[in-house]
Amino acid sequence: MALILKRFYETYFYLMDEASDPRANDYFLMRSPIPTMIILYFWYNFVFKWGPDYMKNREPFLLKNIMILYNGLQVFANVYIVYYLLLSIHIIDWSCSDIDYSESYWGRKHLFLTYCYFLLKIADLIDTIFFILRKKSTHVSFLHTYHHFLMVVAAWIGVKYLGGGHSYFLGLANCIVHSILYAYYLLTAYDSKYGQLLWLKKFITQVQLAQFVGLFVIFVRALYAKNCNYPKYPLFMFIPQNAFMIVLFSDFYIKTYITGPRRKRKLEEQAKKEGVANYSTKSS
Image (cartoon, rainbow, N blue to C red):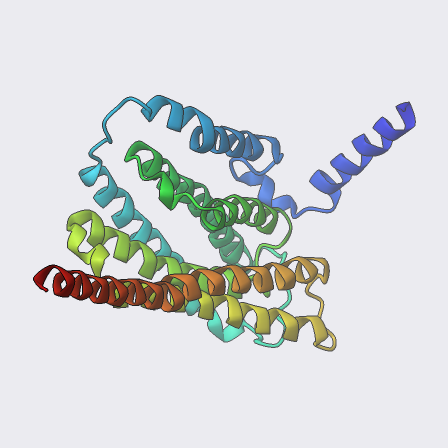
C-alpha cells in the first residue's frame, strides 16, 4: 500500500511539475487541478441538488439585466480571443502546428489566450446556474451539463500542457461558435421573441455541428501528419470526443428540427380530422 501511495505521489508531482508547461504556473488556478475540481464539484451539486431544492417553493428569479450584462461580456471576451488568434493565423500549419514553449511573443500570447479560454469555460458554468434560478430545469440536459463539465477539464489541461500549436483550432472554432451563441442569448435576454425564431436556433445548432465535424477532420489530419511534433495523446482524446459530440448534437438536431416537427404536424392533422368527424357526428 505504501508503495502504491509513493507511486501515486511521484506520478502526481511529475505531471504537475516536470511534464507540464512551467509558464502555466504563473496563472491563477493552474498550479494544481484541485481548485478547478472544487469549482466543478460545487457547480454540479448546485445544478442537480442544492439549486433545485432552494428553488422548489420559490418563484423564478428575474435576471434580465444580469443576463444581458453576462451575455454581452461573453460576446466581447470570445471575440477578443478570435481576433488575436486570427492575427497569428500566418504562423499556423493547418496539417500540424507544433507548440511554441518559448518566451517569444506568439509563444506567450497563445498560452495567455488558452488561459483566457479556460476562464471562459468556467464562466460558461454560470449559464447553467441561470437556468436553475429561473426554474428552467428542462434546459439542463445531459448534453448541456456533460459539455460544460468536460470543456472546463479540457481547457485546464490545455493551459497546463498544450498552450498553443494545433490546439489553436479548438480555441478558434469554439470561440467563433460561442460568439454567435452568446449574441443569440443576448438577444433573447433583451426580448424573448428572438427565442421563438426556429430558423435562428436551427442555424446555431448547425454551426455547432459544423464546428465538431471540422475539428474532427483537423485533428485526424494532425494524427497522420509526418514530422509532426504536436503530442499524440491529446489527439486520441480530441478525436473520439468530437465524434461523440457529433453524435449527440446530431441526435438533438434530428429530434428537435426534423422528427419533432413532423410528429407535431401529424398530431395536429390527426386532431383536426377527429374534430371534423366529431362535428359531423353531432350535426347529424
